[in-house]
Image (cartoon, rainbow, N blue to C red; front, side, top):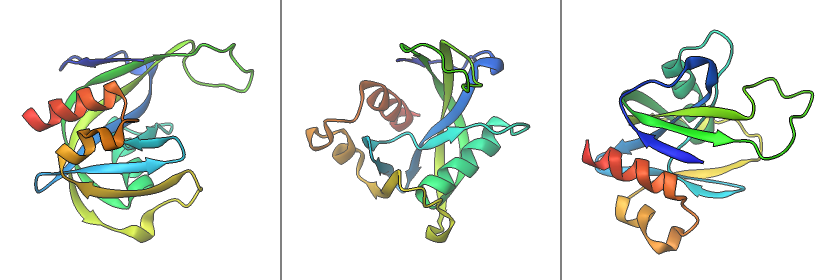
Length: 151
């Protein structure tokens, strides 16, 4: 996984997901799922969706927050290490996730998709999200959080 801070757009055909650092009143949305903590809620694009529509839908489903999509910060390039499964329909072996900076607008907890993977989300001080208490926050998450705070 490699993160790139750039205003340049990656090839749209490689973009499988859209993510965002979500801020509100100086706080950052810290999400928690079965894999740990992260500050990049979002998810997979559906056919015909714009990047911004994907982001709004996915953040709402994962966190219960509606967002105002802001500036694109860059993108993440990921590389599959395992052989391609026959049912896998997305770009392979490399794929891209576009990352934005967004503003949390309204909390709507009933809008979350209860699939059991997402465990919750809360607004916290950026220092708390970056603290060693959340040591499983990846370097890529830290890169984009720090970039979002400087915009």
